[in-house]
Length: 401
Image (tube, rainbow, N blue to C red; front, side):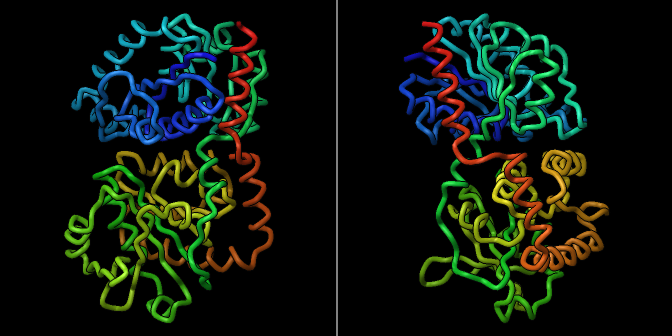
C-alpha cells in the first residue's frame, strides 16, 4: 500500500481531509497531513500524524472573503506562516507516493510544485456560485497536468462543468464531511417543533454569533416556549465552557442553569429557554425541523440532511453578509435569509418571524420537503463519499505499481 500526504487549507477542509484520511487508512495506506493554515485539530482527533508544528489564526483559513480578513492575516503573520509550510512541503514531498489535496488553488498549486502524483478534492469550489466555475489562475492549468491523476468535485453540476473545462473526467462521489452526520443515529426526544441554533465553532466569533442568536430567540413568542410547543437546542463546542458562557450572557439578561442530571440550559426571565447540547451536534441536526445558522460546514451538513436553513448574518470574520450570500448560492433554495443590517433589532425580529414561518412549512409544505430532498442529493450527495474517494485513490496507486 502507498504512503500519502494530505494537503488542506482551512478548518472545513481539515475536517474533510481527516475523514478522507481515515478512509484511506482503512484501505491500508500510511497517511500524514500537512494543514497549510490552522492547527489541524480534525487530523489530531482522527489519529492522523501532522507534519511540523501548527498555528491557529482568527480567520480560520485564507481570508479571501473580505479586506478585513486579508489585513488580519497580514497582521497575524499568516502569510509568512503559509510560506514556511510550503517550503516544508517541498522538502518532504519525495517521501510520498501521492499527494491528496483538499481545498482550493493554494494546495493545488503547492501539489503541482511537488512534482508528485496528485488526487484532488475541490471542496472549496462549486459551479453553483456563478453557474460556470471560473477557477483562479493557475488552478485550471495545474489540474490539466498529467500529474493530477484524479479530480473530485463537491457536487454534480461542478463535475459536469469541470469535465468540459479541463477536458478530463471530474467525478462527484459525495462529500466526506457528510459521512459522520448521515451515519449518526442519535436523536433527541420527540418535540412538536424544534429549532436548532448553530453559532459556529471559532472563537471569538462564536461568542458574538451566540449573542445575536439569543437576540432572535428573544423575539420568539414566550408562550410557545413555556408550553413546550417549541424546543430550542443550541449545538455548542466544548471550548466555550460554562463559566465563560455565563459571563457572556449575563449582561444581555440570560443566565445559565444546571440540572441535577448535569444538563445545562440558558434561561431568560420571560420563560425563554435554550437547551445546551455539547457533543450532541449530530442529534441537533437530525432532530431539528429548522436550523438557525451562523456557520459554514454545519450549514452544509444541515442541507445534506434535507433540513431547511435560516441564516443570521454576523460581523465576521467568517459569517459576514458576503459569506452568507455566497453560501446561499452554493447550497441553493432551501437556505433562507432576511434582508437587513446585521445585528439590528429589526433584522433580529424579522428573522424570528421567518423562523416561525419556516417551522410550520417544514411540517406542512410538501413542496419544500421534496425540494430539501433533491438539494441534499444533488449538492451534497449520499453517505460514503469518503470511502468511494479512498477506493478510487487506491485504484490509482495499484495501477502505478
